[in-house]
Length: 288
Image (tube, rainbow, N blue to C red; front, side, top):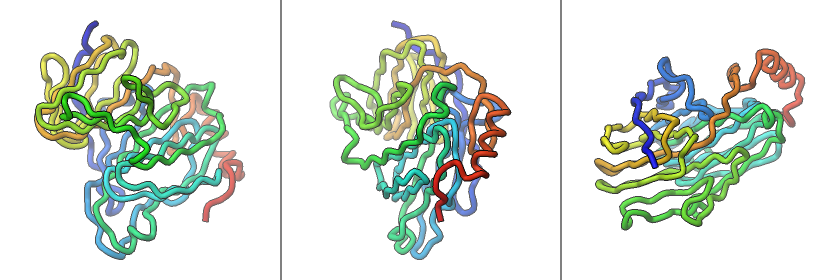
């Protein structure tokens, strides 16, 4: 077994959306993607007062990829043109396959608008290969109590298993492309060793805290994305302080990526067709 090599960290860049604090580690001027992980927004943490306007993500379209939304604090309401609707609370996730086309809204539910409270949300875009870009849209909302919380390293590490398998446990989401996805809470001194990563690209983002990565213990702080080599099949992470991580891995797709706003396809012609189809109302029923 050989360790993956720590290459560098990428600090999230501040890019607020209205009054919503937003930082984005990928894409950036130095890192276009970690194939198939295309985009990551970190909203918050912040506290909303009573009678607030909530999140600004009203109805908008997507095609050609998947969104995975992690509710760290607060709550998030989802509605889409395929008829799915849910309110997911802290610790839960929303996994949406845009596929051939969907319109959805991600907004604060009425209870949050009225009372306010803490809010912190991560949203990740995961690419789909060309053979799946026009798959049927789908959505899964998962509350925290349905996500296995695996106690590791004598209780100093908790791995919340969202998709994939770990030591006989299986996450509640079955990825179309074999993506492994989790969040990891670590106490200071906690140690996590991951194997079976040969040929896989790793997504490792520090939501909060400070970690050492690899056998050299290279440091990564909150709001930093760790870039690792594709080569190697193991990875070790040690928490320098109490930490929360977004950790996933997947086989790279290795296809051209052409994106335009909410559409991610393989060619410019496919982007043009996506815009035409959306404007013609072919993404399902319109959300009010």
